[in-house]
Image (cartoon, rainbow, N blue to C red; front, side):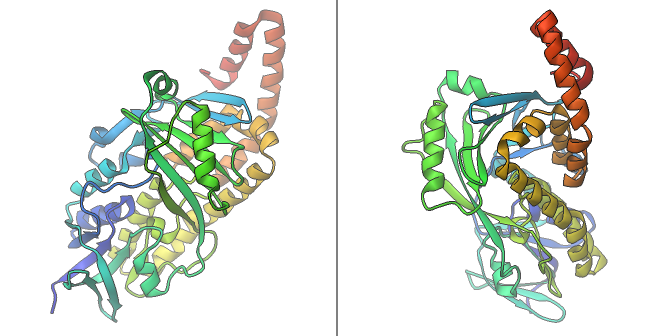
Length: 395
């Protein structure tokens, strides 16, 4: 009989690393199987909040590439730049971030080990690796990404909805890099039901595009065309494509002895495409359910804390992409909206709070902008700025 672990985690990303960490912290014997050998590249913008990482008692400072000081949005030639509070948004490379989290997990980690077969029994789950080794555990955590082998073999998420994304790690001339340094950019209006991004890292730019139901070749062509406009040449650079799984309804994420987390569960944000936050959150919820011996608890918590949030996010995305002009003018330009999104990035708020903040602050935003316009006519740009600072804070 193979050695019996308390839990086997398949996949070493943020979801798997978080599940392994919280299980090991509770004294459980956890094994992580990661099919890639380090360094494990993962196409990802890598944006997250320092507030999200406070649940871990160790520092992530060694893997932080950039601290964003502001954030910019562009739609059809109009650009809005918003200041950000300190540590509101940090940028990482996933290879470094994932390895750092796994190194602190205190779980047994095996890299370069691919799983080829999963057998679920009444009291255990047995995993067979590509090397022919058989491993067993009381529980299994599927953290193996959007194309999850665990999901396929256990019959979960058969009707999943997928968006698509392409990312490139692009070197940039100093004068181009300086325009984006500490200031991530989101570009709207160039692709249907999606957007492009430019995220500054320590020595290069992570640029990409994501959309729902793109036409063949649309993402590649649009990405190259738009980035060329910003002076970012992509010729000869590898384009990393990856699916974005979206959890939009009540889907089974658990069996008797196994559960799905992170991208394997489809927990990408349906509006922003951000996934690290929900990967970490689902990893923690999975560990709590395993510790309680109640996987149905995980199913219910995901639906209650993530599922409804994603439905609201999907509704907001549809509203934005079908009426981008008014949404940009009344939403993106509203500093209160950026404040709400910052709180959401650190998992202190959800889309319900964001929507309430958007509509609740709309009268104040319109009144402030009208007053700022009048102050600008009377006292020039400085007068306009003083009015905005009095209401919004530093701008």
